[in-house]
Length: 45
Image (tube, rainbow, N blue to C red; front, side):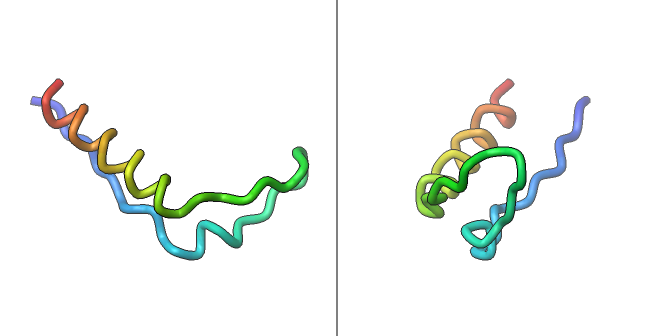
């Protein structure tokens, strides 16, 4: 049995800082949907 530990994206994700790429807006709602899809996928793997 494999175990995966995940954590939902925090709302502060939209304030993250990166230094190696030009800043692009982060769509928080999309991040939540992507995370949910990922969790569903690994649960059925």
